Image (cartoon, rainbow over all chains, first blue to last red):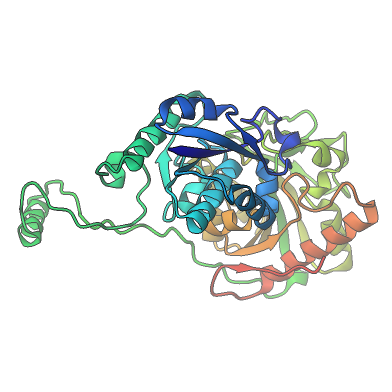
Length: 346
Length: 79
């Protein structure tokens, strides 16, 4: 049995954010986490594919077709990507490549991510994604659950439902014979009785929640409107006065832009640890476009530019924290009767 | 954050590079940027060109705030 493993540039030891544009490559043998995978999987990991997270994110089609080209003609019985933990772009990359490999080669594909990873929501219906840890400290544990499941798949052992196996439900229903032999009618009535008694019961058909928000009414007259800038790109005054964390942020800041024409290098910078800061530090306007907003203000295209811009860091930040910070920022926007927001993210 | 702002009834445009992530998270109005580390200006191009690109894409975002949409929309950019 043979396996091929996909990892990013960081886990291949090539480099961090400054190397995130690394183009896909395939190496014979083991690199980084594939050592652990090879030791636990009942299959030989023959090749490791390495690709930079930004390259995969920004040049998805090229990256996927290059990698599928690498795999052409190679023998493999299973394809594994990650684990990606809470690393958002890595998770999306793992999901993207797993889905493409499954479609083209029809082999089992596995990956692992933390529940906060946006890759989960995007790919859990297409790919078996194990519920992974938050950081690389969980590398061995996360690889182990993937390998154990992979071994069952490779040897044709019976597989349990997603919850039991430890991966995110794909929303697939399969028919099973229950040991209790209770019919659906009996189970339904039993559930109803429990409900009437106020006892706990577990539905057999969970309905996934779709958490969309209603679209806010559009601005009628832009030339009268008060517009605010918000960013998750971590742009702050150079001394980071609010001590916003570089990752997994729980703090945000607001900075007065009423008297400046643009965000100057050396006065503002980014503290975001999730991307290469070189370009943003050189010209913070590429992340928070203050210079062109001031121009639009002069031209009268917008009526007013809200006095502050708001900033936090959107890497490793949990959805719950992001929502809480969002609500706090909204309070500020409402006070000044902001009519519309441009939110830039990196 | 986008959702909390929109929930408050304030129209919001998310400018970002990873469109599939924004749509999954639930942004309703999206304007694409050119990359993750430099969303609105490639440092390898002249300053004027960066400014033009930024001016154009932010302009698209401003217009997007005035558009009535009934579903998630990714707005088209020219440069």
